Image (cartoon, rainbow, N blue to C red; front, side, top):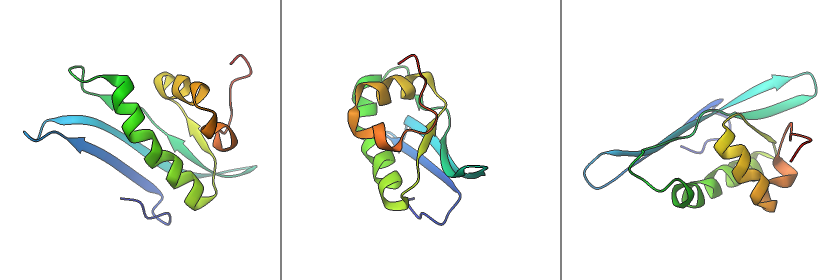
Length: 100
């Protein structure tokens, strides 16, 4: 699902045996300083390689931010670490921690 006018986005990936590989949601919210995407918990099946899954799935998140021209507020520490390591997310990162 990638419709920008849908305020609740759900992303899921399954393997060929229909076992969940990963899942995350994003919610478009209004804040005093503007509209943002909240990126909630990013679940990765413990049997999967988290780094590889993030490398495959984060471009979807970036495309949504680019298409909607809205920043992303990641709440999951794994995603925050990913954003910190990938400069292409810098201009879309809402509430970037000062300590990174």
